[in-house]
Image 1: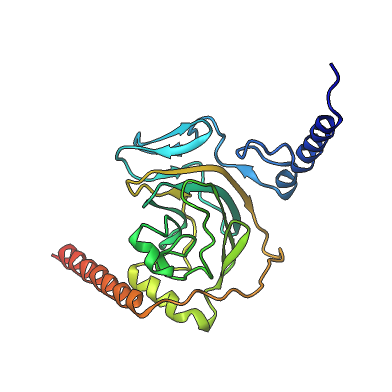
Image 2 (image 1 turned 135 degrees about the vertical axis):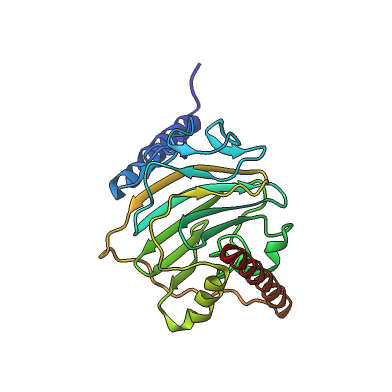
Length: 262
């Protein structure tokens, strides 16, 4: 029986595409281009070797997921480099909340269902924000249940968040234009000058999935895409709720400090 010419051409096309992408059908495997760029896989796709947790995280069909109680999943071998690029894929269930922590001082790439979770009402706490610091330029998330492509780039005082191929945050935290945002995070207890944290996936008690976690060191002289990104505007109602939340945080911190002095 002869194979139709159209099917043969389709198979040839698929083989060519696979060779060009480094056979990236498995998102946990490095493509040829990623290998050339110096990426290393942080998650091997099979188990949580190198990761620390309390039994609430597991690997299911090449995907990191969680259930039960136990806290964050932490990559233990070493802290993240001061300058780095981190790539990962993520998806959430309706109403889910999680986060990728990558430096000390409250550096969090927010993972969220913007539609159903309360944090989605404020761009500063929405998906791909620097949580409680800087909002993304727009909501670039895919529908709940679909995979999103996250990317974090840090070089010196520059922080970039990318979502599904779109740069949504480009922050130089020494730029006076962002002084208020930096102060807001500082009031929450964060210091953007801190370095040396271990990669951590937040357990907020909600269903969340991660895969394709890949890391490379960025050199100090590497040229980044610094095209301007305008943070999304925040409504008066969201701003008022944010200030109430911040007030509660600061009052709670003051009580804790008072207890420690006794």
